[in-house]
Every structure is written in structure tokens, then in C-alpha cells.
Image: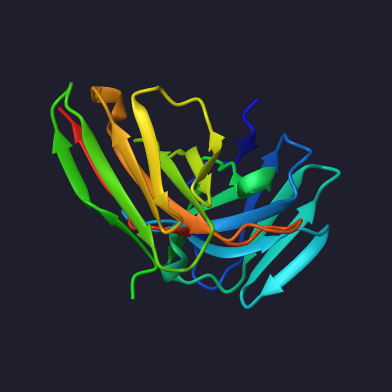
Length: 111
Length: 115
């Protein structure tokens, strides 16, 4: 079992729809959970992070965390073509802020 | 102002050569990292330094040697390059402290191609 699992996609949604990206992790010691967006040929950039069970909203983005189920998700409302990218889930644990990245989900938003 | 910079951006070299990649951050962070992203886009931590001290050293061949002359710089030297070392190498930095973590800022990446 991989430490962090994401559906590789591509996940295709029409413009204006809600995109739902899911991630499961195996390390119960994970404390914080980061979502990064990576455009092709670019470096990862932080979308948001969450560390408490429940929902956290930031603009069009909502992160959801369920530590009992070892599950974290990212919802993107009113999806735009500019949201088309690979989304990386990364639980954090231990000293040094170590992130373990999933393989990413490629999102395609069609106009 | 570039927060995390890497040089070179592209590196093409032959098997068996030795090469270095440099990284600098001007964010005042105390922790820096090296990641490798392979052709399947899987991003994996290699090393981390906190205030010039090695704190994370994942299962990386001994041919890879990080060096941190000060907390704003973290260089990666690779000896005897192999075809499998071809990848994009990202440097990142963050401020570490407390129970919960802070964002890691990534550099633009160095695309290494070994022929």
C-alpha cells in the first residue's frame, strides 16, 4: 500500500462545476495535510492546508479532513479552465515538516 | 524578488559525470529541502536541513551529497551520474516550529538529463 494514494485521473469537469479530489494516507501520525497545485512544467504551489477534522474553506476551495478514516479531500467550486493542473496531496509528519506527496490527480476543466 | 531560486534551470550531462545544483532562499526560513520528481511526476523528499544540520535523509544513494553552507543555501552534489538520475529536482524552504507546520515554498526546479 502506498503511503499516500490519489486517483491519477484525469478528472474532467465542465467549467462552473464542482471538482472533488480525494486522498487517503496510511500514516496515522500525520498531523497536517497540504494541497499543492502543479501546472505542467512548473513548481508546486500551496493551495491550502488543514490540520483539524472537518472542513476548511478558502475562497472557491474547501479542504475536508477525516483523521479516523485517514481521508482528506479538496473541493473546487465554480471550476475554471485555469484550475486545470495536477493537485498533490501531502500529509506532514515528524520533525522537519516532512511532507509525503501522493502521485497527484490531474484535473481538466473544460470550457 | 525570487523567494527560492535554483541554478541551473537545465542540466544535460553524460553518465559518470559529477554535477552540482545550487539553491538559495531569501525568505529567512530555517529549513530547506531537496525533492526529486521523476518522469511519472512522483515528488519524493530526498534531504532536509534545519539551520545547516541534516534532519531528513531518505533512502538516497551515497552518490548524492547535500551541503548547506548557511541556512539560506542548500546545494546538491551528485557523483557518477546514472541514467536513472534524470528527473526534475526541486529545492524548497519553510519555517519549522510548533506542532503544526508551515508552507513549503518551492524553487522553479532543475531539469537534469543524463545521457
